[in-house]
Length: 285
Image (tube, rainbow, N blue to C red; front, side, top):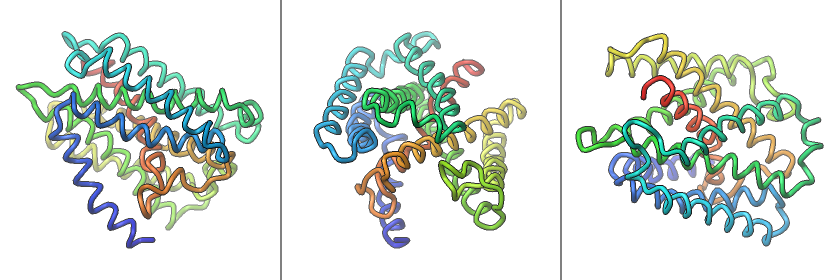
């Protein structure tokens, strides 16, 4: 398993870095459609693991929405005079609201599952609310690149990924070494409060990097944004774990050997990206 994870990471990491730093925003947006279609197919298993028709129906629906977004709002039109396009802004805000609801579902699980576990419609809606805002936030951040700052968008996307990776890694190692208090035993028994705190502390490395590269930033704001983004990433992870538990599936897919599916790799990002984008709009634009 470890060997497979390492081999997959060796080819996946350069591919991801190449896309976020060197693909033009327009090509990046269309390349994302393919990635999110795979994630949509995997979410279809959460809706109904035993019905291919349901899975492909959800994939087709989300695919139409993704293509429509790219056609209605080309990457070159995402930002205008420092303002996010109204459609992108609305989807991102909707995503932020969804994660407030998701937190309530996770905290009240398994009681909350009685409301949605047998409803294909609700699980489909939850999938759209999870994937569409993440897609929009990725394009919005990537489209911050300009001729004067061609790598700004890539840096912003990478910054969110760095926070998520730091939080995940810190949570894993601290939780394994010191974890005693279960964070959400009904949702994900392996996760602990100590691991969460360790992950949050690890993200302070990201704060140090940001402040060393951009010392004019306000330290308190950078710390707050980093912690809030890390907490959102933990929520994204727990939410997917909750849905997979109800669907009785361990991994969302098998496309990434040793890592599972695309959803398994982006579950934390689905929450972290919209939350970070909303904070960016509120405090830095």
